Amino acid sequence: MKKLLLIFLAFVLGINIHAQDYKVTFMPSEITFLPFRANFEEARIGVLYYSENANLKLDLGGTTEILGIEYPASKAKLTFGIEFMAYALSTSYSGRRLQIDAVDGFFGGHASFVKFADNGKYLARFRIIHNSAHLVDGHYDETLKRWMNDDKPIPFTRDFGELTFAREQIAGDYQLKYYGGVAYATLVRPSQLKKYSFSAGMELHTNKFYSEFFDDNLNLFFAYNFVLKGMPVYTGNNHFMLGAKFGEWYGKGLVFYLSYFAGKNVFSEYYTNSIKRFGIGFYVDIF
Image (tube, rainbow, N blue to C red; front, side, top):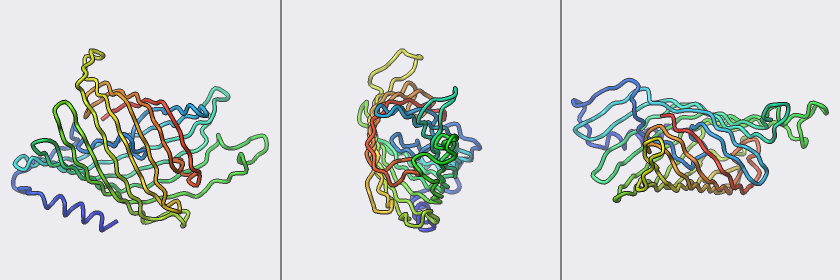
């Protein structure tokens, strides 16, 4: 994890930043590094419905910037923030409540950097995240007093550092972002999990088609995220999204999307299961 931090610092310090010319802001109003749309391990508030089995993926979380340092002469910004999030698997509705089967929780912090260029941005983000997973009462049979399907909770933990670099380019009414990153976990349970993982992806969006809905922009987008994890054998996870956001791309708004995922189950209590899922969802950008 220290190596990832050093690489991030080397990237930031390698940019021509004038230390005598900066502005410090507490609780900046704008987010520097927009969470990746197709990455499940990003903070959001929303629901994803899986048509195959009527299960729901429920997302609850948020990310915010605490401190920002702007370098006007270099057209650059460095920010520090926190993020807390969880996603839960709902398998049915009973007794006037959703039956929550499994939960993955995440919390940690990040440092983000952006360098503005003539036709876009260069970005970097370093995150330190704790991830733990749990089976909960929706997977427990009260009548038989045992876990369903004879499953037992797996003590699952990942404490990891993640370094990601991204490039945004503007071409007329379209904007393309592509990125790649590496993560290293200082602690994993079960111990058979690999400590290194790798990610890459892209996002393409346009506000060429304007909507009078909410008197704001309509952004159409396509997003793809690839993750290579050792669970314990290295396997690729692919997630494709096609959607629309009502609102500014970097501001508050409502997102509707179609989703297709193929890979290891994103709910870590079932990390050994390979799945393919089509879903329909929405979430709210609150930054």
